[in-house]
Each structure stands twice: as structure tokens, then as C-alpha cells.
Length: 588
Image (tube, rainbow, N blue to C red):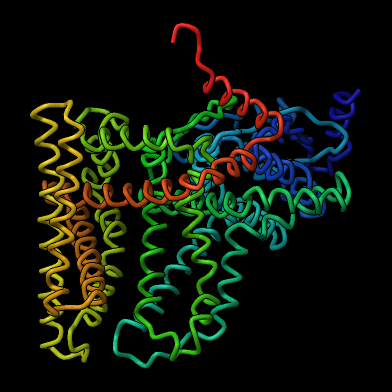
């Protein structure tokens, strides 16, 4: 009966010379509720396939085909360009191009409420990441396609706005919001670092609220109305509170970063490709090395850059003389939330990620992955690094190299500002800058020598004999003590201060980042550049592992993660599994 009614929609929604050529209907996400990730995806998808589709059909008349179980008019498709597209790059999101095709040729795309079909969504963090990356790259390719250009030239203004904000415009808006965050933060930082008139940007707290809303929290509003229409206002309020308590803001801000990274990288460098998610029931623990490979370029690097700039701005200004430190937190609380979500979300939504034994195993595997020189990215850091940098090293496009070179400018400006802070006199004079530069070179030299002593000696012990854990640990402790001594002697002698050492170290890091970025953009493949990239990734991994061990130490954080990540049935299953592990088996 439902199928007969859906077929009758073709005639009921036709208008003169504009026949109805696609009829869509709603979906039921049956995987919702299995885990917190499945709930977030189910609510997001449920809102899109009901409330959004309903409004896009009437009154906006801007609905397309989005890969949902729509019914097509086969005769119209065969006579007007078919369904398939030729390019697997620019037509990566092949579903929506069918909607473009029908709309450009005069067809109407209707939506019916009375029928639905069951559908499962992704339930694992890696699956969802691949899905969001594919959608973002697909929208980046749509922006440069002929179909979108023709729609933009032919749609009336109302339908054009609806089409823009329901398709490429949403992703472009997210990317521009992230760009605005970087621009605001670095401009405020530079005003604080250089001897300028420290005029603060007015209404910075308003901008902070706007950014955190645009990067995730605004998605709660349509979700609330979707739940209110479907289940009632009381249930909608309860479900929103429950999902927020389970970490939905963390999830949505993280995947807004995914969208911003992939749509901007697609527009700059291309490289859009299909990413199979499998759509399977995957809820396994991903080890630290796998998480690092997946999220380093899109989230960890930008997250730590934001975190470094936020900390420098906090330390560079005398906030007690600038209306108190509360002014700082009102201006940047949203950026702290974004940086924390980009850095921490992959671990929070990774099952059993804060269990001590798992962390020890992950640390061992990650160190082996960093040390090996295998031929595949999942076996060796060196192979992964070559795979990540291959498109830049091998490109002949000067424009792509220029896009990759763009961050160098902000690194160099920040370095010059940090030189001013690291100066012993801090008066902005040439002699002060020269003295600060000597401090920076000295601190970098100490750090480089310490790194060579620690990493080189440990690799030497590994090459001599693999089974020497006691000697390796003793050597690591001895090397760490010598490194600390190298930093404490100048402090004891009064040659420098802790603040100057921190400022010099930060300045050196920004200078190294600028030089490495410049060499990579120029296509220079050098052992020094590779060593600098390795040192940065190694330091990044150590900081992340230290944070995870700190969170795992109390013990209750692991239980809290399990309770928020899984539903009640899975919690009981995990407790039963832990009990089986703790009981000695026969023959042990």
C-alpha cells in the first residue's frame, strides 16, 4: 500500500511542464542507542532525513537526492543524462549529482512522510570520521563542478539560498569559521607580543560564543525540534540533556574540525577519494598509533597549534593590569573548548582507551611504530610521513606549494614576537633582539643535544641487544637527569630565568616549524627536515600519552568513559567480560 501511494506521488506533485521525477521518504536509524556515538549519528541523521527534508521540499523547493532510498522515474533518467557520472573525483558524492541533474532539466524532487525504511549508521569513531571526510571532500569537489555553477546561475534567489545552506555553503561556512578563529587568535597574540598599543578587540566574548555555536552547539537546536515533533517536548528535553552529558558537544565540535579540514584541503590540494566505511558493527579498541595516524593532520596538529597560541597569549600579557584574567577566559573559552575537543575526543570515544594495561600496550606499540623503518604506513612512522608528504613533494603546482607555505608567515611573525619577550632587556632594541636570539640558539642547542643523547643511545641499545629493558630504562633516567641538569645550571648561575627559557624554547619551536614548512613547500627532502618532523611527532605523542596516563591513574575516569560511551546492556557485557578476565582459567 505504501509503495502504491509513493508511486502516485509522481503524478500528484507534477506541475505542468515540471514533472515529479524523484520521490523520497524518511528513514528509521535502527542503530541509534547502541552507543553514544551511534546515538549522536542517529539523531543527526534522523533530523536530516525528517525535519530538514520536509522543509527543503516545502516550502523551499530545494530538495536534492542525498543517497537515501528515493524512488526514481527511470524513463526520465534514461532520457536526461542517466544516473551515473564519469569522474570518481569531482563526482565523489555521486548521489547529489543525480538531484542536480533532475533539477537542471526541469524535474521536481518530492518528499513523502507516510513511508520509511530501516537503515543502520556508523557506530565507530573511525567509521564516522571516514564518512564525514568523504562528505566534506565531496562538497569541496561540488563547489568547483559545472552542475553547481549552473544551479547558481539559474535558481531564483530564495531557492538559491536554500540550496547554498543545505549543500556546499554549510561546509564552506564551517571552514571560514575555523579561519576566523585563527585570524582572531593570532592577531590578539601579535598585539600582545610586539611593543604596540595593547588595544583589545571589543566584544571578544560575543565572538567566542558565536564560534562555539557555529562549530557544533547550534546543531542541538534542530535536533531538539526533531525530537519534539516526533516524541514530545519532555522527551526531547530529556534526550538533549542526556546526550550533552554523554559528550555530544565534544563530538560535534570534533567533526566540525573534520569538515573544515577536508573541505579546505580539497579546495587547496584536491585529492578527494572514496573512503569505504564498511557500515559494520565495529566497536573495538583502536591502539594509540592508529589514532595518531588517523587524526594527526586533521585534528592533533591544529589542536596543539591552537593550544600553544592560547598558552602564549595567557603568559605574554600581564592580565592583572588588563582588567583581570577573567577578560582572557571570556575571550577564548570557546577556543579552549575547540582545542580540547580536537585533541581529546578520539580517545574519549575510543573503547577502553583509559584502561592502564591498554595504555601500557599502546605506548609500547607506538614506540615500536615510531622506531621501525617498514614499507607501509601502519608499520612505520617514516613510511607514514612519506605518504602524508608525498603529494607536496611530488606536485608541480606552484599554487599548491604556496598554499602549503602559507602557515610559515604566521610562524615567523610569532617567532619575532617571542624574540621580543625572550630578550633580557625586553626594550625592543637591536641589542636586546640579538641577546634574545642567542638565548634561543642556546636553548635549541641544549634540546637538540638532549634529544640526540636520549634517542640515539636508546636505539644503540636496541641494536646491540633487544632484550635489555632494565639497561634501557636506566639509560633513559640517566639521560633525562643530565638534560634537566643542563637546564638547571643556567638558572642556578643566574644567567637566565624560567620565563626566558620558556619564551626562548617557544620561539625556537616556531622558528623550526617555519623552516620545516618552508623546506617541505620547496620540495627539499633532507634528513634534517625528517628528523625535525619526527621530533615534533614524538613530542606530541609523549604529551598525549602523558595526559592519558594522568586520566587513567585515578581509576574512576575509565568507568565514567564506559558508562557514557555504551548503553546499559553493553555496560553489563563489559563488566562480565572484565570478570572473566580476572578469573583464572583451567590450565593457567
